[in-house]
Structures are given as C-alpha cells and as structure tokens.
Length: 90
Image 1 (cartoon, rainbow, N blue to C red):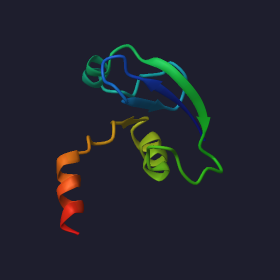
Image 2 (cartoon, rainbow, N blue to C red):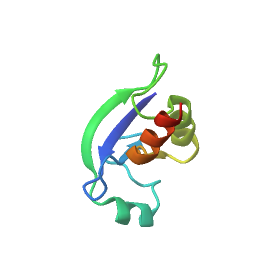
Image 3 (cartoon, one colour):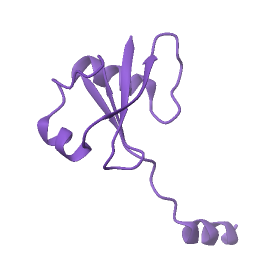
C-alpha cells in the first residue's frame, strides 16, 4: 500500500495522506480549504512497516481504505509549568 503525504502551508505540522499523488477527490472540500494548497512532502510504502514517526500506521491504513485520506495533526503543546509542578511533587 502506497500513500502520498502533503504538508499544509496554513497549519504547522499538519499533514494530509492520500492514496495517489495529486488525487484529492475523496478529501472534503471544506478540509481542503482549511488545509490550503497541499505541498508534496513524500511518497511512502506502508507495506512491511510496523510504525510511522508521528501517526498510528493502522489508523492511517484504515482511513485510507475507508475515507481515501488521513489527516495528521501536530502533537499537543506541552505545558511546561504543569510538567514542572508534577515533577516537583514526586
């Protein structure tokens, strides 16, 4: 299974995975508007892989099969104050 990954010019660390290069026919129009003009990042084979850097590979495969796309959001921002407070309580 191949997928093509595009970076959003509007949203930092947001990526769109699709099945075929430049084929956004199954991606909702509203999502494309908020995502911006997709910027090609890479083409990747999912076969034989056990994991991806920042996404659950099984969730990506399932979304590609069912919806024709997968949207990867950036990781949540870490609250350093809360981290410090929880560490100091230990």
